[in-house]
Length: 82
Image (cartoon, rainbow, N blue to C red):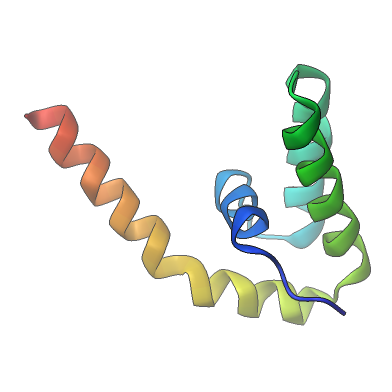
């Protein structure tokens, strides 16, 4: 299976969930609200990869990206506090 592109990894971070199918459900729920065709295609491609991958591989992908989510949350807190 192909690996995730950097853009797809960002989509995964936006819709991250404890389970692979939970992330897929979140993305499906968002699709009707995505107006840009390029972004919609990106989310659909990410969904396709998630559906075909194993739960084990999904958990590994989350672990490898966890530090980025923590850093972005810390950055957001700093920005909010001035």
